[in-house]
Amino acid sequence: MTTTTALTNIATLVTNDPSLGRGSSRSSKSASGGSSPLGLIQDAALVIDGDRIAWVGESSKAPATDNAVDVGGRAVIPGFVDSHSHLVFAGDRTAEFNARMSGRSYSAGGIRTTVAATRAASDEELSANVQKYLREALRQGTTTLETKSGYGLTVDDEARALRIAASHTDEVTYLGAHVVPPEQADDPAAYVALVTGAMLDACAPHARWIDVFCERGAFDGDQARAILTAGRAKGLHPRIHANQLSYGPGVQLAVEIDAASADHCTHLTDADVTALASGNTVATLLPGAEFSTRAAWPDARRLLDAGATVALSTDCNPGSSFTSSMPFCIALAVRDMGMTPDEAIWSATAGGAAALRRTDVGRLTPGSRADLALLDAPSPVHLAYRPGVPLVSAVWQRGERKL
Image (cartoon, rainbow, N blue to C red; front, side):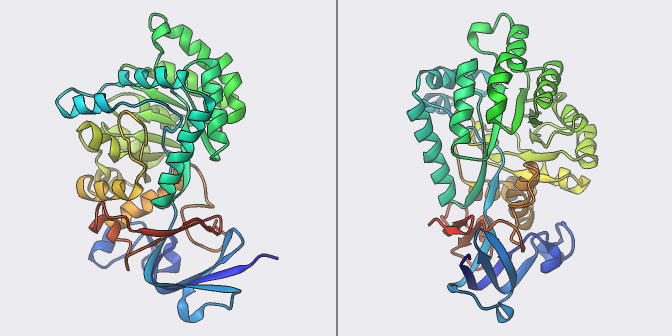
């Protein structure tokens, strides 16, 4: 028999179910007092039973429980769902970042620096790195985190990266198609054959997803299609790095093959936006990358107004977005990408869950996983209102308090 715990005296509870709170649609009207996507309940309580949410509602109606925690008039939100990161790596790219901030442009080729360091690292070093950044993300409220391979680019190195990742998180992505490694630069077709053949065979048992960097300097549309199709035949679900550095075929391909997400979506045509709005593919925006490369911001407002589903993620990686902070990405999305605070918070929680095709996380409703963050603030809007301030004061993951 599990123990039940009530969190009481919640100033604002984000459920991400509009039927449970103010508003009835995922719209931007909440900034002026209208509907909200967040399903907000004021003066609220919630009940945790084991690793699940058993009840949410107004404090005055809370059922009796074994334990109670008075949160002191603070806000409670679902744990962040970070649906795009690259944590299995070694080495440091400080010099590259310093040079870029001094005027050098960003390109896909810098990945090869991390590949050399990752290949040289031990399993223990790589595992310790993954654990370090998972703990760092947890302290900032992230309770579900996807991570990828992609810094090994040999059969053995990609497979060990995925084995290491899978020992720490359930959401693991095979990204053998990150870039063509230097030793095969003169024969990219042979590398694509490896990615779709022996490397895929070795990696598929350790991953849920397959990804490809569809971009100039990486893989073109035909190569991306072949890679994702081969992965799907092995039982891996497709997602894609699309349209980050330039206009290209990535978004259209993602929607065509029903990829769970098209990630970056910085350079979009009207046809790309229409495709995302009409399909099931989530547009995952990664503002940390634009911040760290001084690139143009994705236009979240354009996507939202068209009816596309938008997620926010950190893209935590050593080259182009070395942040694990979802609150930071929320602040950037509100300040520079046209999102309202409510939309950004939804995209960092329920939106990330949609990008992983998960219904058990990213929300606080009866039956969902008890993943939640307590903010040292009365409203979740403070995540954008107070950028850079460590507002997450406690985190529960699968019903267990982690900090």
